[in-house]
Amino acid sequence: MEEQERRLRINLRGFLLLTVLFILSANPCIPAEDPAKFPTRPVTIIIPWTPGGGADLSTRKFENIASKVLGQPLVLVNKGGGGGVIGLTALAKADPDGYTFGQVTHSPIVPIPLQRQVPYKTKEDFSFIMQYSEYMAPFCVLTDTPWKTLNDFIEDARRNPDKLTYATPGPLSMYNIFMDLVFVQANVKVRHIPVSGDAEMVTQHLGGHVDASMSSPLVPLIAAKKVRPLAVMSANRIKSLPDTPTFLELGYDIAYANFQGFIAPKGVDPRIMKKLGDALKKAYDDPSTKEFMITAGMEPVYKDSEAFKAMVFKDYDRMGIALKKLGVVK
Image 1 (cartoon, rainbow, N blue to C red):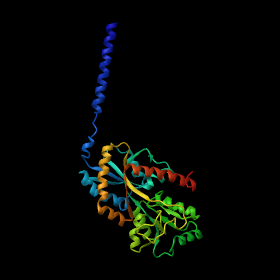
Image 2 (cartoon, rainbow, N blue to C red):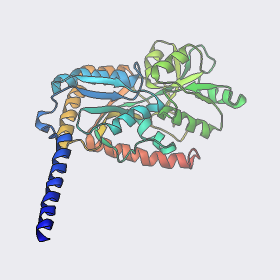
Image 3 (cartoon, helix red, strand yellow):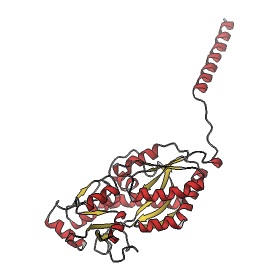
Image 4 (cartoon, rainbow, N blue to C red):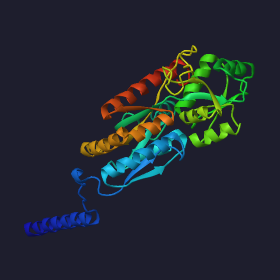
């Protein structure tokens, strides 16, 4: 009897050993890449907007220089839609190996998650690499329209509820939320026309399909006398539009700067994060990058990983309070 039990135990151990060996052969353990050798293959940058807009074009400026610093190509992938949510969802789900990071603006990481369910959490699912600019966006109308000031536009909207329209780069984008908050304070109704990005917004506006629009790519159109700025969303007047008042100056208790930066999935090795940050900072410091941003209506603003993260978290908390006070969200 004891001999049978002994043989049974031996057979059981043999069965378990064979099972473990089978599992290991089917799922071999692949060692993580040495961070000191990163990168050894191309790196993907997810842009959560369609091609042609300010976020897309500015990222391409960084790609040209940072790829040379890293010694590997940076492959840009546009995943537009949902006000940036589609792109950030893909980024949050990407492997945290450093081979995928993304461009980010204010909209998909601050106001949108406060207003509806999204497949990621702002404070939990991302690592922050750096901020590189702020959008000081103007609210504009075509130059051949009768509105010379923001008050002209507001009074027309008051006389004609729901008649006037405006566009921003996407529904629930920072610009959409900002202007809706302005119209709440003014107690007027202006319809927001959703588009898929900056390029479509500009096309819709120049084609006369909307009455007004708001985004930084409008700045070059102001210089070309195609649109007229009525106000800017920043706390102070911007250098490129010194004669355009802020909404604060015009009596509206609201001001925001729409940041741009780079983030990665949560959990990327700090040494890899530093390599990415250093390469992108060299691209930021290049005079041609800053010249491009200023021309495109952006203010070059650098914040490192910790400062960028702290600013985003602060904006997230502040925006939540503002939206609740104005009754936009419960």
